Image (cartoon, rainbow, N blue to C red; front, top):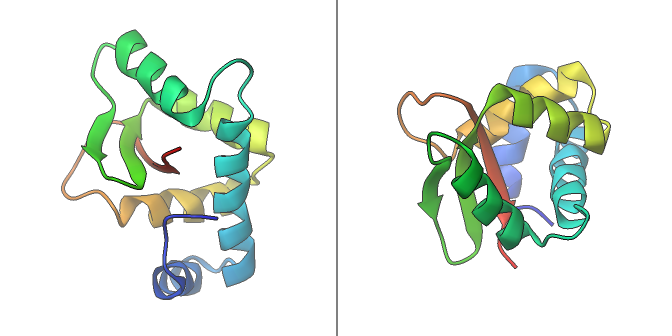
Amino acid sequence: MTPFDDETVAHVAAGSGVATEALREAAEDVQATIGDYPGLTVDGLVYEWRQAFRDDPLVERRPDAWVLSVPERVWVDVCERAEISEETAAALAALYATEVEGERDGVPLVLLRE
């Protein structure tokens, strides 16, 4: 499950050269990876990141999702844990960026809330 509708995923996939299903699976893999983080829920991990990082990564808190802008090192770690290829990671970042307005430091990340 992801916070993205089919149209958005298909549009980003078409523009990035990644198959729509591969992009959707990558977003699901990231969500599952964050959900399986040792000792923390998704909400708990977001709370930890908000406390640990110098700049609060929270962009928006929605009833169903956290919209974040995380440091590059966090993005790389998440992609490595989820076993996301570099090509798919670039498309995934573009997908997440559809939920963030304007320029931000960091990499957009959208996670379903628990």
